[in-house]
Length: 171
Image (tube, rainbow, N blue to C red):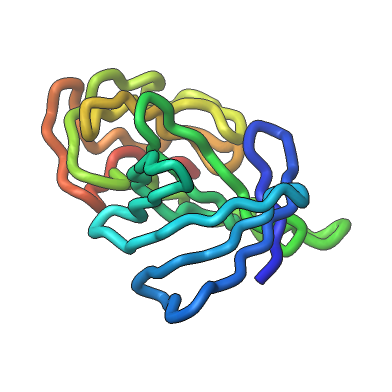
């Protein structure tokens, strides 16, 4: 399986091949990132993946799907937004399917609301931060998927939230 991943505007070509008895729940894989090979043991977890690289280094990643092919990936000490095969999700020229309807921002995992970065009625741009949620001892800034106006803020600072809880509505 080969695909492109865009992280922070840098696109990388990634190829993943199973080695032996690898499957959806995990196994050993050969991963090529921009042609550089690595072998990893990957196991599915409740929140995402646990990866064991050559040399014994282990990394856990919480992975949350978002709109438009975007994924929120929580790694130790850093949270990144990644778009997988973004060209598949770009709209056709002159067509604007994403401009209508409500955007409902929900908590990707259980946590605590640290900061609310907008107020009801504020105009926001695509990828503008709306709420900061602390989860797994990390602060995660959750952003708008497209431009719009904040219609509703459904939480308060300091509130505990469960996974899937509505945080902000943008129209």
